[in-house]
Image (cartoon, rainbow, N blue to C red):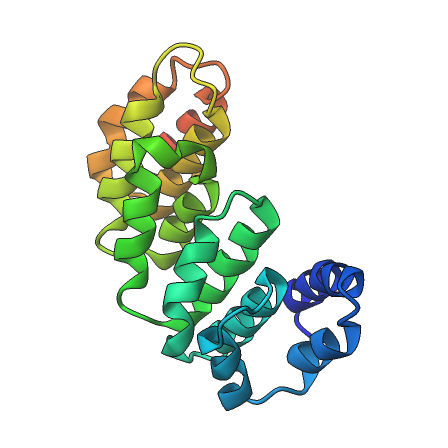
Length: 191
């Protein structure tokens, strides 16, 4: 079993147990087929743990029916749900993923939940990645910005992508104590 699925499983099993639905959760995690999982996504009244499990498994299998549910979970307030959605979206192979992640990462009203979309953009290496990471980082380079972890993820992502167009924003990031080291390392990776 994949480590990310194991982590997801431990979390959703606990949620399902509170509802007395541990057997259903176990079935979704290990035995349900793709049609069963897709049915969970389209059935009304499903608990969040069941939707997340179905979307995760379908996404990791490359089934694009999971796309919408995974994007909603990528924007969830619960960091573990965002992380599992990002993991599945990275494996999904849907061409809409980068555009959706860029929209979430650059949304100033959702910055508190942008960490996983930012990391996903770096992993995807899509045409949208550098512009979205640059725009997000530029917005976060204000003194005492509370979202420095998102800014740090942008810096690290731009370093991974090593696009020369990110040089100006990475240079400005060096002036911020929490970002300085990562920005310097990212600049060294640029051609």
